Length: 100
Image (cartoon, one colour):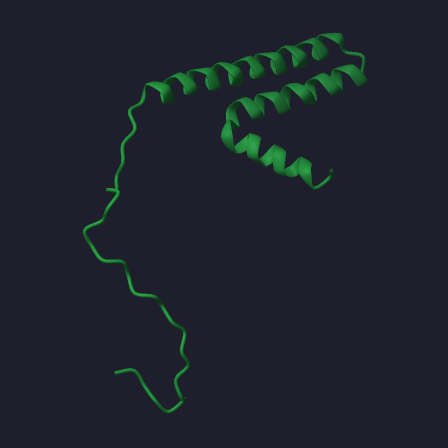
């Protein structure tokens, strides 16, 4: 489980870096406010986390609608007019023989 958390956090942070940063900052504020019994800091941190989650949800909803409206384009035809490339082989040459 310990090896799984960094992967999850890295993938989430790469997808949405701004909202991930806001979530981390809000969570740190909330923890500091909860441990130090500073209720205003705790509520501010919780409010930031909720705001970042709503922002992330709104972004994902908007991205889904944009992808649904976008036409599909194919860059390669199904049957290419060029012949396939030859297979590469790794044959060893004697040390004295050079390429021509």
